[in-house]
Length: 272
Image (cartoon, rainbow, N blue to C red; front, side, top):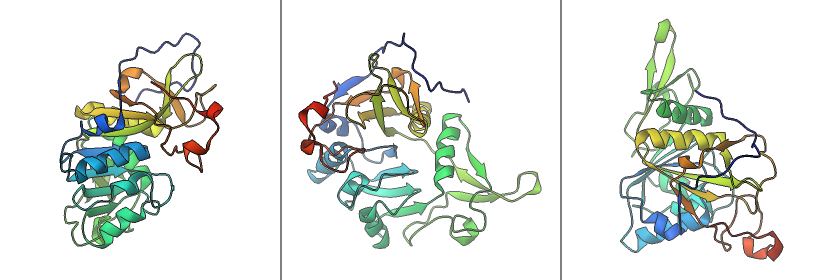
């Protein structure tokens, strides 16, 4: 896998391959039965998906796949997708930040899997590399081991996503790969260049979706621009993004503890 630079050069000029749209318009691009990889989802995007479903014009039967998610409380982020019928299956690494999805799983209303965060992130990498899945010893002897349930959380969850294999004679687990139709990711921009930066996990997720022939929907996950690339983020080609959702100043942003409307006007920046 090619290494990605973590430093922005002064000559970077964005090519602007993406289309800028609203969260509502982006939600209408997602079809029923879609598999969505979530690196970051804003309240605006989650609410738009839920509203489309409730109105009867939007998608249903979604599969949500994610490794980690921010603990933003019961009424934010992925919790806003917790409607019976909107979500069919959740494959998650962290379940404690999503109590509303937990409740659906506990009530046997969705299929639910709990897999190691690192495995899910590496599975995205292997999907991007056209591998049939990810082989790892992580999870052997634990709840993830198919001999102990294979990460399935309730009776409704029947399909086995994890297999016990013995490459070179040693036990390991094969986590099956699958096509991903949509990636929802967070991005930020570099000051003075407009170059796109995102986490390595989001970059890998977007490449997996590209390999699957899907679309990448991004929304700025911070207010303002970056002066330098922080640890864990990388500069990527803007051609990796298909849709950029314009920032909604009323939306709750991932880096804050308060709503954006509570911030001073000088801290706000609407990105088009």
